[in-house]
Image 1: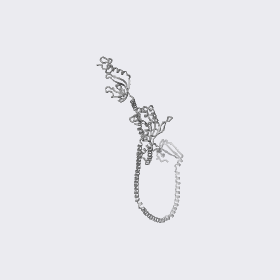
Image 2: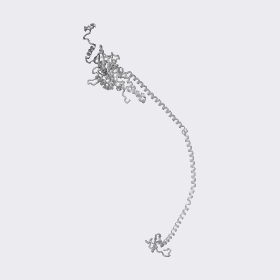
Image 3: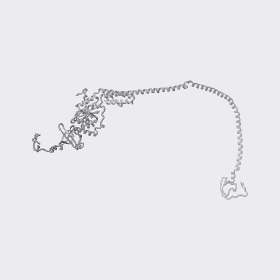
Image 4: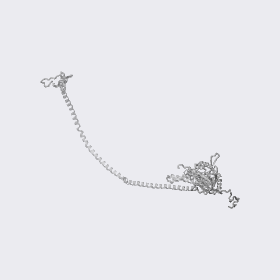
Length: 489
Length: 88
């Protein structure tokens, strides 16, 4: 090659090449060595051209850049697997690793061993992790969210007392529903110590007596970092544990803080939060009007019902009275038709006739029986007289009979007495006792008085009766007189 | 209607709740006429009071402040600006 001095550097070497010239490999080796000599670096850059891990190898190839420069970046599959978030274009990420030169192409890349989100991205990631943690603990469950009364009449507002937000809330509720009593509890809402102040303010608000119906935890719009206070874990737990239901309105529409997630009601702005705690006055007026109508309608209905009831009762009582009167009237008619009432004298006349007949009979019967008794009496007197006329004759006859009876009695007795004396004398003369007294005795054998010898046999027991006693003896021998026929004295 | 507090002593919410109860009772039609008349009278009274409160409602704002002993006390605060002009 001719010795053109193309570079302005003095050319050396016969063939136009400097004896110091290096081969590409040498040069690349040198560069690679220089790069390797660099310590591990942490580089902050924006991800660009990220298309996810390579489908075949699983490594990621993309670029990181800032306003002026860009560099290729590689994350090996193994490192990428340890990621805590997905890379996306536009992310601000801190990559920790080393530069590397791929000698085959001479391309320099930054090989990141690890990477973390930087700045707001990092904060957002932390917030997301905290949200996930609290969600797992159940702090965001719908079931544990308390019901906010439709009409909170006593509301505590926890926010900065110096900002515009407190005025917004007051104005909103003054327009919407001035019946809502507001209790303002001031607190820092951003910066150092803000979460602690807010936690204390929540506690103070909940301790107010009488307790408020709900607590408005509100803050106006701001940067992500400004709103980070409301992503504080301790504050979020205080919101969840607050004994009074908490309504949040933090920042503007798209902002969602962890306090929003764990509160009992989340509203997009402080104004929306204020509006949500009480119905508008116009609604209350509507409700009252509706109630007035309902009151009137129901009362009218009740009165109408009572009227109908009264009317129906009246009809019934009229009907009942009428039918009762009709029944009575029928009964009266029937009674009136009975003979005792239709001709009251009839009965008396009939009885009177009966009585007259009876009287007639009585009169004639009496006179008849008087006649009869008189006739009987007239006949009886001479008969009575006739009966007593025979009494004297009969008395005389009785006297005669009495004297005859006395005479005859005496005669009969004296005759009998003389006869009896004669008989007694004979009887005395004939008495066996007199015979016995002369020495005779009577022998009694087994068959009575022994008159004949054959009436006893030897050995018989006999009794011999004497005039003054008995002798008991046993028969020795019996001796019968020949020719005696038994007539013994 | 066990206890009949004076209407003025009821809070808006208590009065409102009682009114709703009265109306429901009346609507059920189960009340004796005398009771329903009494209820109606009470209802009208409540309604009148609630209306008046809506018309005369004034915002009440207080501020919870720490006193010297560190305890909390309520201090009356200013109600919202009554002008409807938006301030920028």
